[in-house]
Image (cartoon, rainbow over all chains, first blue to last red; front, side, top):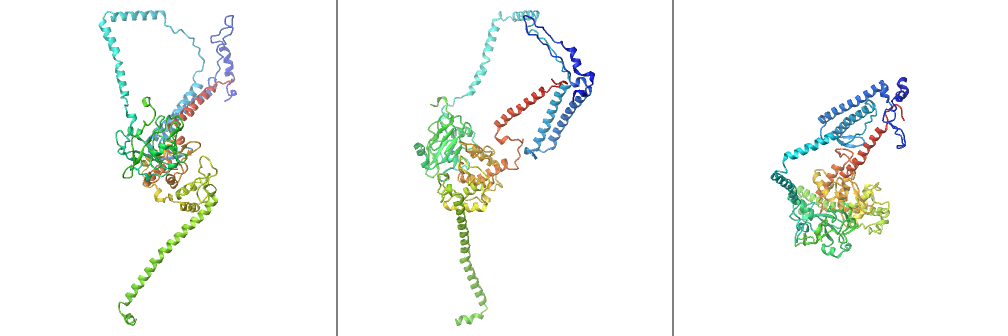
Length: 355
Length: 269
């Protein structure tokens, strides 16, 4: 819409002139060299001066609100008619659940149309005349303040707290004791872990059970370059304490060429190149199992700590503080892999008393 | 002879002759037929090895050595098995374009017959996993839920929860598993290509592998339905939250500024 559609006599510039100077305007003097220019002259919108434009705006707003109503009805209709497991293909998105798509689209349109209608209504039809409102003091009037003081004094006197000392003292006692209920609940932060952080379920003679097949592992099951996860024999996934125990006992088993192992202790604690390390990162306890079989590096997905499994799981990158603990393994009389004891050091992240 | 000749008109003579004839034919058949068939197989196999060796010498030997013994540019292929060849060449990773942190998947350079011949040659160098049969990797009837558990335990650390892939160290990465055929998925688990560890049948049984393939087809197949659409790479809530905060909130702010910046006055100043 351009200005030549508006009737000549209604052009806003004519009205603007006699509204000038309506706000608080000060003039420059010696103490205040910068004059307050006051509010700029109010300028009208097309809708203020042209009834046809105002009608158009009204229709637009009404249309937006109607669209919102239709979209809401569409939302209810989709909820009722579309089966929950129906899948559909929508061009740029791909295969998508039809119900989710319909509900999201209709609700989005319904909400957006209400917002757009309200904004259009406020901007084109509601009054846009600038209103200046002077600041006023925050303090209450002297009379109100005097009354409040008097009321408070009278109340204090009538409560007789100063005179009835028994009530006062017992009340103070009650108020002091009540917070103790909260303090006592802090006991639930404990009990202290004791030595449980230092021990896992691994012990001498425990077989290494494959977590995929739930069968005890034999050395010939593991080929060079393979990666296997094991848990101690006897632990069941249905056990109540399974999560607590596997969080400490999770084991990562890899097989290297014995000649590739640089660390002598690692070679001794393994079995013909089969080495078993704790799967729990020594930084904050994420499962370390991104194993690169050619470089023998295992890295942690959380903070990229990298351990060299051919060199005693030494930390070669990242924030981890110490090497992954290694489990001593051997073969029992029936040819199954077994632990030769618990981990020599606590697994997982360091803690205050770890030493 | 006369005795025999005299009895030629005996009522049972025809039966005896017939039995003799049958025994002779059957005996001759058992003596010759399987032998000739085996011979034919042998020649086909050695022919494939022979052809495979020719292809190998042209396309592979410069990095892997003329006898598959490996050089500084490529590892030894003795004992990697036919499955490894079928995976590496069948996904276009081999022949490699250039040495680097990781050889990417690309357009396949050989047809399946040539790949089979090279696989036969490499398999003849040393024992290794064979190319799986359709029966081994067909996920029909496998349990996708169990497969999901196995995938999260064994694979998700690198390949992400629904096989979208992820970064490793020094430019290496775990590739996305979308669009990888069932056979190649099976072979990758079996052989452990490049830096991926291997999961032989002894630690991840054939049924386990089928379950994993069924899971991947379920969550990462061409027909997979994403409940909400716009999965943003399927990388999880961190990405989704970041997207909502930066792009969602950002676009709202931009719209608010745009609405406020446009004056409704008749005279534009």
